Every structure is written in C-alpha cells, then in structure tokens.
Length: 359
Image (cartoon, rainbow, N blue to C red; front, side, top):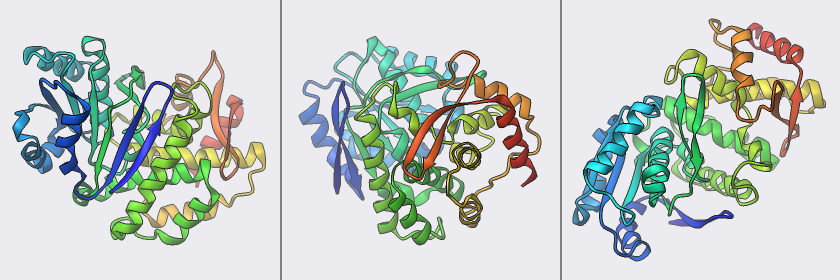
C-alpha cells in the first residue's frame, strides 16, 4: 500500500493506494471519526451491481445505508442530488455521520456535494472505482451539472481520506480506462516532460496494461494533482492549469448530451485543440501529429464530432468557469510542463476548431 498525503489550506488527508486497501477502512473510521453514528454509501447502478456487496461486507458492523444513483453523468442532476439529501434526512444522519462516495468521478462529485450541503457539511470519504477518479477524488472539487454548463453548481469540500483500491479497477470497460487515462496524460503534459516521455514509450495497450505500470502511473498522477492543489485549493491561480483540455472537452460533453461521450475522451479532443492553439500562439515545439498518432493507437478519437456546431461550442466555452466577462481563456502550453492561462480571440478559436474537423 502506498500512502500519499494531500495538503491543502483547509485540510490535510491521506490517499491510500493499493490492492485490498478497503480492508483498512474500518480502522480508519474508528480512529478518525470517534462517535460515528451512521454511514451513508452513495454509489451508482453499475458499481452497485459489481462491488457494493464487497464494501458492505467490510462495513457490516456499521449497517450502512445505501443510496443508488444512475450511472455516469446522469447522477449529477438536481433531482438526484435532492433525492440523496432526502435519504440522508429520512435515515436521520447527523453531524457525526459520514458519507462514503463509492464509484467513479460522477458519484464522487455528487456525494461530495451532498456531504458539503447536508447540515452545512458532514464528513465524507472517497472510495473511487475508476482510473478517472484518481484525479476527481483528490482536491475537493464537488458539483452537479446544469444543462447550460458542466459542474457549475458545487463547492470546494475536501474528503477525510481517499481509499483507492486497485482491485476494483479490474472490471472497468475499455472506454472507462481510456477516459481515466486521458487525465494521466494531461497531468504529464502540464507538469512533467519526463513523465510524458515515460508514458508515451511504455503505454501501448490500455486494456493490457501491466498492473505495476498502472499503479505507478496513478500514484504519479495523484502526486502531480497534489502539487497543484496544495498551492491553490480554490482555483484562484495555478490549479486552473489542471483544466488543460477541459474548456473544449466540457463544451463537447454538454453539446452531445452528458453521457454520450466519456469525460476523458472529450478532454482528449480538447487537449489536441489546446496543443494546436499552443503551437500557433506560443510556437510550442511539440509534435502534435506524433501525439495524435500515439493516442489514436490507444483508441482515442481526436477529431471533433461532425454534428457539433463551432458557433455552439464557442458559446459553451464562453460559459466556462475560467471565462471572465466575454473573453475566452484557455490553459495552453509554452512547452511541456509549462502551462499558461491565456485569453484567445474568437477568430483564432474558430480557425483551429475548423482544422479539428478537417483532420
């Protein structure tokens, strides 16, 4: 088991990574949350069918309550949020209770926002079951979606701990592996040229990855996430760099309809877009065509879906959380490992959007 200590301005907490770390959960609950009254597990339909019984077996002495959300981004609606809060109220959760988020990034976002809102904040613990959640489970950004924009209603609310049991990654379908691995590639591009080189030279088959390669990659990704979050918990500065590829990625998700494309696959298209903008605006000396060749061999699409309107995407990008007034602000790269937030003109954005359609 590897333990990574996350340090933010408001809280320090551990991330436990390894096979079987769920078995450490009981001791943590007893020692870290004295007087614990109730446990509410928030999971989704997919994870519930696959793994909920295993978690319940670990926690059987606590007799946890379970709230099951729809799978994927359908979990992050006002209705589901309201229903989860209703469950907490009906079963009498109090400020000595804890919420366990058991699933991928969407469940983590939902459960964390429920915990942040219920009685103005009760403890919660992240128990991620996807590769994508190595990113979303760390750092305390919790939210639900609005039809106008993704993650627009939420809070910064840190968990008590993260228990990242790698055994639960073995049942992931390939599209979820791709979705999560895109965030690892993002971490490398914005932070560590050597890590990017290592990934591109060693990862050639996402479905057949050796467990040690996956574990090493996830630990490195969490460490990179921590390096940004520790400096800037509430995204007023460098933490915004973690949104590399997300401005267009979120717009694609919103325009296609949440759940029609995985988060990471949309972000991959957004990263290709940001790399091409970086080439044009910074003269980035990075071979984007070689990058596209590598990620395409891993199964990623790098072109914009044909049905998407450039004008509609621009409108969505203007609603991005990094936007100020009527400006378009993008995380771009001066070189690998050196991101910068830049305002970009609409003409340039449209030009490169059209290039993505023609590729």
